[in-house]
Length: 252
Ligand code: HXC
Image (cartoon, rainbow, N blue to C red):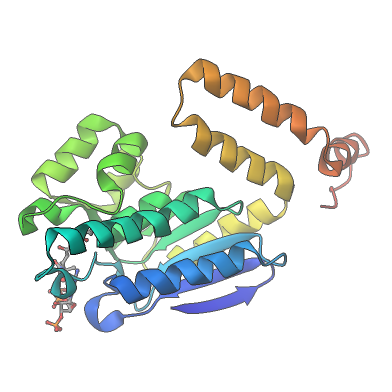
């Protein structure tokens, strides 16, 4: 795992290029530790996750490490993935996936846990697990259907087929497609747009969206009222609105 910090943005690179950045227990534990550190770093406001090399974001969980697992080992591994990726959901800071190549299986599940996905044209995305005699185990059966709907999720998961970046864009599986080699620089541009905005409002918006996904609409709207009201107890609201009225940029 490599981490670089630059002007409020942290770049986390999954770094096992010899196996297309496949995730094993050790990598998941390191990822979790790095994300925890970034969450508590006041100088960091946005996190970008990418994969080392120009071929792969993350080609899945490490198949060699799973082949001899018992059912108990598998449950524990799945839970470790859920805890790690669940931490991304719970982070107060937005996390952007810069998908620079293959995002398969656990790799797509990592991207699904991120808030915004930028894919390079050469990216290939899918949940090929059923071809290996397993199902997605790092959140794919749950997060994919929430993002693209149950029909598309079942198509991808039951056939195990891989989609191009263009098809992923058309089904809402990624938010942007950019030329090969530009996923990271584009993700940085998205990050810089976020950096201009109120950090407390960004955090509240992420949290309201994530928490709202799991509750009925009426409850979600009550949650929004509460979060909206709380914005008015933060100085960023006065600063943002006064700056607009005074025709100047807000200072957050
Ligand atoms: C272990 C992997 C790997 C993986 C690639 N490698 N993906 N090793 N686990 N997920 C290794 C290859 O074995 C190979 O090692 C090296 O990386 C380069 O890969 P190649 O296959 O030679 O590259 P290429 O022919 O270009 O094919 C790229 C590919 C293919 C299409 C991405 O590697 C592939 O299909 N990988 C597996 C994708 C997958 O099924 N992912 C889902 C895993 S299950 P050597 O030593 O030969 O050079 C999963 C479950 C999540 O993610 C939930 C768990 C709880």
